Image 1 (tube, helix red, strand yellow):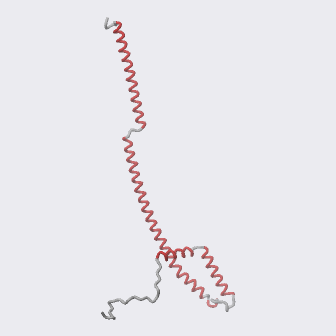
Image 2: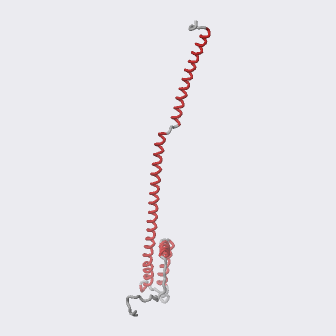
Length: 183
C-alpha cells in the first residue's frame, strides 16, 4: 500500500479543541437571551450604558476618552452592531423554537379535540339507544295507569260477585221457605 494513496483517508487530527453544545442547551440559552432582551431592565440598562458612554467620551478630557466624538463614536457603533448581529439570529432561533412548541401543542390540542368529538359522538349514540330502549320499557306512569285499570276491574268484579251472591242467597232462602219454585 502506497503512502500517497488518495483512496485512504488520512487520520484526522484536529488542531483546535472540539467544542460541542447540544442544540437543546443552545436553544434554551437563545430563548433566555431573547426573553431578557425583551424586558424593561435590558432597555433601561442599554440606555444607561449608551448615555454613560456618550457622556464619558464627550465631556471628559480627550486623554481620558477612548472613543472620541471626533471619530463619531466608532467603537460604540461597532459594539452596538455586533450586539445586533448576534441578537437577531438568537431571537429568530428562539422564535423558531416557540413556533415548534406551538405546533406541537396545536397537534396535541387537535388530537384532544378529536378524542373529545369521538367521545361525544359515542355518548350521543348511547343516549339515543337509551331513549329507544325507554320507549319499549314500561314507565312509572304507564304502570300506575295499568294498576288503576286492574283495580277498577277487580272492584267491578267484586260488585258483580256481591250482587250474584245476594241473588244466590235470596234464591236459597226462598227455596228453604218453600218459595215459588217449591210450592
